[in-house]
Length: 128
Image (cartoon, one colour):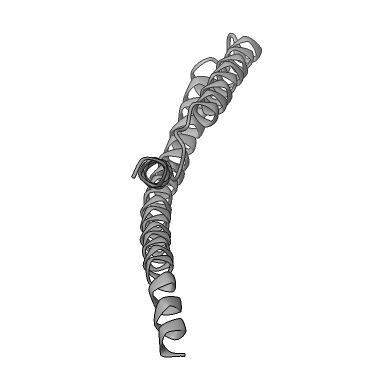
């Protein structure tokens, strides 16, 4: 009876070590995902804040510029000046929208380091 119990423990020893190693690898990778997610969140909040501040200041500048141009050309070319301002704003808005769209499509993968580590783990398990 002791021989059967002892042999069963020996058979489960490598399996337990393998499961323990796999569990430790998975835990490490999940921690890496959490770290990358926190870093990405901080970066996005910073970029969002700066972008909103820049948009607000640019809007104030555009309002002041529009008023300045409208006042300067009010007596002679008021409609033409306002039409040119509208055209410039519309073209700038289209350019910004196209750049934003291109930026979203060209964005790197969020969890690139984690995916690389999973690939290394898979290769290590395939080629002992």
